[in-house]
Each structure stands twice: as C-alpha cells, then as structure tokens.
Image (cartoon, rainbow, N blue to C red):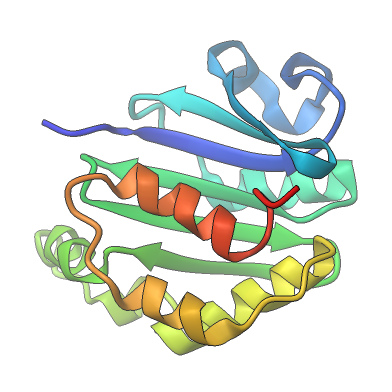
Length: 168
C-alpha cells in the first residue's frame, strides 16, 4: 500500500492555525518543505475527506496568492486542485492512466473530472505566472501525460520544480 494524503502549497508567513481557510484541518497539517519566496508545502496524511477545490479557493483568497492542493492516492496518482486570485480554479491529475482506473471503478471517465494534459499545462503556466514565475508549458504537458507510479508524491514535488517554486 502506497502513500495516501494531501499536500497543500501556499505562499504565507502565517502558521496553519492562523489561517481560517484551513479550518479544522490545520491541526493535522505539518510543514513538509519551506520553499523560496515564503512558499510552504504542508502535508496532511491519510484520507480526511478534505474538499481540495474549496480549500484551494479559500486559501488563495485569504493569502492573496495562488494555491495548489494535491491529493496523493496510494502513491499511484495525484488529484491537483488549484486556485489563484487572478488565474482562477482548475483541476488536473498526475498519473492519468492509473487515475482512469480509479475513476472506472465508479463508472467515470478521466475527461469527466480533469483537464487534458495540454490544458492542464497551460493553466499551470498561468498559475506559475501569477506566482511570479515564467515557465514553458511544453514540459508541463509531458508531466501531466506521464505515468507516476509508484511515487506520485515525488511527481507532485516535480510539478513544483516545473512551475518554478523550488528555485532559489
């Protein structure tokens, strides 16, 4: 069994308990990584039933900066919920082949829930621009097409590299 849990990326100097958007989940969040420019990566292990879309939107509004929420599913794939005050909200996934398998169990298709890789790359580039970085969407599209098993959480961190957050 692989890793299940959430990774939340936000630009803030405040502690989790000081952010009302984090509500009751702040007590289970721990700082996973501090990135240049006051960006934090928090981790929330397990399957707490967080609504990533609502969390990303509320946290983006509260911090005034774009936010990424990644739900890692058994180390196989990642649901990406993103929001920015300017770039808006979008949903994509890392590891589409395995994600399609999870969705098929409930009779859903990948296209029912997630942007295709090219659109996800474009929205990621817009998100990065709002975060203060200029990136080429082409490598991002490859990232959204690739299989990620067995370490999907590492691919999520690779997304942070690709959108410029982990650069000094």
